[in-house]
Image (tube, rainbow, N blue to C red; front, top):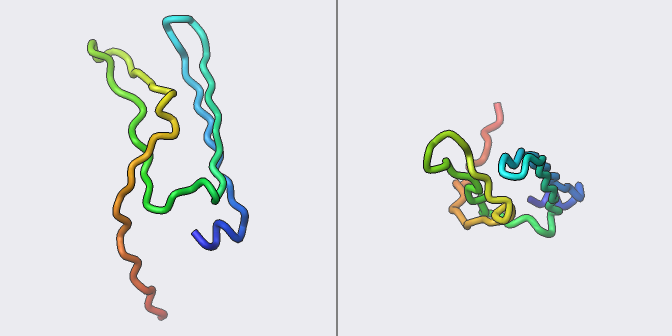
Length: 80
């Protein structure tokens, strides 16, 4: 994370979907700077199968939802 902050990194997210109900293209955009990134966070699923199983339901309101997860321990790399 330190290297990302030093590089002033930013992650851009662009989501494009088609809303069959309104016959319209839906676009959602967001970005995350290193100040907004949360170490050990994992995005929650924002989609599910429809009851009939013939479509995917996308919940755009869940675009930023996350949960904390345990990160694996980093082991030092042995030099050759």
